[in-house]
Length: 123
Ligand SMILES: [Zn+2]
Image (cartoon, rainbow, N blue to C red; front, side, top):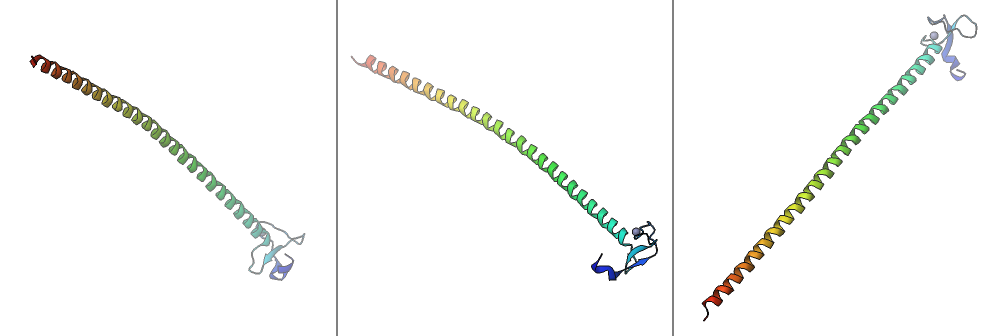
């Protein structure tokens, strides 16, 4: 107020009744706007900005929470599916092993039969 006092003057009382030091008048800027009214407007604007930022932060936080929940859900899904596939893989490996064992046994049985048949033919 000190430096820019020359840019201010005492004018008629503003409609909000901001009286300057019992003068019955309002301190006004050169353009005519009440200094006190401007102060209040600036304060209100700052408060509104603060609330806006807070609201945005809260929205961002909620968004992040949602994204994290989704990620966790997908992670669990992948984990479960991986376990299922590993189980399936194990089961198939077992089947292959059993099939190989069966073929091997049949081959042995066939070899024995051939040997016996050859012995039978021999004098
Ligand atoms: Zn005023």
